[in-house]
Image (cartoon, rainbow, N blue to C red):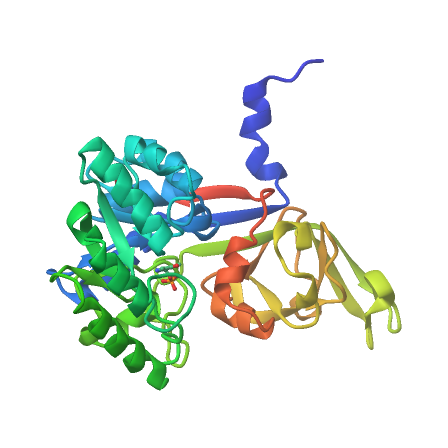
Length: 381
Ligand SMILES: *Cc1c(COP(=O)(O)O)cnc(C)c1O
């Protein structure tokens, strides 16, 4: 008996062990919300590095383009090369880590915009512009106190002494905040001032400082362009306050089987969970290989989307390909194999899971595995 490829594909959703639902409508709403927050005169770019934080840049970036975004940030040249054919030419794709040596001509020919972070990167790009007679756009990054990327004050002086700004078409000068997620940190204002001071060494140019959290620090952090990533994907840019963003990602784990176990029966590797009473255990087909961190066992819970008020603890060790839920609270409710339990989503916020695991939602999103059946929701294009 042969099986048609179309049949294999048609059943993929049902067969999957877990499902990721990515709500592009919510993504676009989040973009609109941030645009509204900064006002119409200020451009809202989007960080889509690392495959749009694990959500799938091929679907996310075009949806953001439809929402009005015209400036995209990736980390590496190859991420930029992958994204370029998916967006029209009026969308700028900026390579945050800058051009590795020898890749300058490729960037230029491919229509990618480098972020120039060091004297070395800046000199090489200026040399290419002079050689080709093309002042191709770039962004210039200044180090306002994070000591990661960007030119120092001394570098800027050298740059000016070498007349490099004349050779360059600098679309924006930019910098990045180290502590924007903590609105009470005095480092934010310190970095803003340092950025202003550094900027004055150059001709007046449009500027950019804020990522997701920086947008919520106040107007004086907005400059001409903001560069959110996490908030677009539903993460909370204001960790001390309720999340103003709409959830974008829902992760569901599919039920494989369930059983009642007697008191003193163990569950999972190393018998980390031992039932103290008669307990109903459900095995879901999602594990650490899917990006559901191993240490989450005992620290978090799932829900049935139809019964969100009933919390179902994740018990025992997370295995590579499965995990156990204590579903005793559902009693004898009929649970057909394939039933989806929400692990991340509107009822199980990403940021709450992240803080239970002593990490950040960024890390959870960028760890999402390849085995999920992914479904993108977009009501209108
Ligand atoms: C990743 C990144 C962003 C986006 O950060 P979020 O916190 O996800 O909004 C913006 N700017 C730079 C330089 C980045 O590296």
